[in-house]
Length: 182
Ligand SMILES: Cc1cc2nc3c(=O)[nH]c(=O)nc-3n(C[C@H](O)[C@H](O)[C@H](O)COP(=O)(O)O)c2cc1C
Image 1 (cartoon, rainbow, N blue to C red):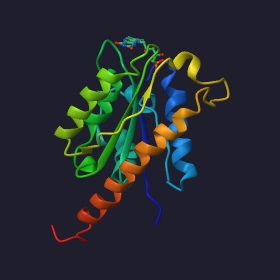
Image 2: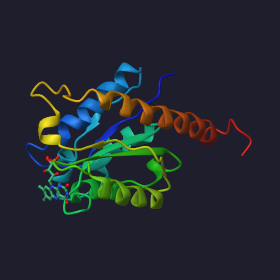
Image 3: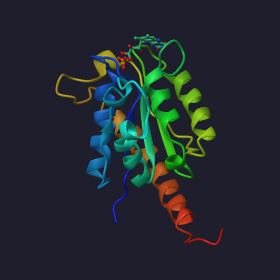
């Protein structure tokens, strides 16, 4: 059975470069036979409340997911509010699932500071953040208009992150399903 790993976009900003980075990560996952989709906080964050009815699609996706990848820009050295809202909305759906966090920035650090902060938040949600991350720096010129990437080394960087994420995904899935003696 194929793995299900949605990609949560970290921003609801119109015209954000992170859209292209999230779509790129999802495409590389799909090529590897992973069932995936990009979750856009804009589809949720304009709702007035986070009542169950409004967030049900997001809850259903995360409940069925085996892992999560977050692709987020860094805003003032922290995480965008819409990303935090998406994480604060659910709880049980995240538990004991691995998460990889990718940063996006126009500068050279690729969102390194936001990646660290988001990993701390995911621990409180009972997720298992993995060490490997991809840092999309210089994002304003990194993607062509058609979404293709100008620096092919990112294919390999994502591949290394996926390899580690898939290991944890399979191990924790077996654990959640009671297939290992723990
Ligand atoms: C409100 C705001 C705060 C930002 N703060 C940072 C920052 O702390 N560090 C950084 O590297 N880039 C920062 N940027 C620039 C982003 O790197 C840049 O917008 C880049 O395109 C990624 O964000 P995007 O997905 O919204 O486009 C900020 C951008 C905005 C809109």
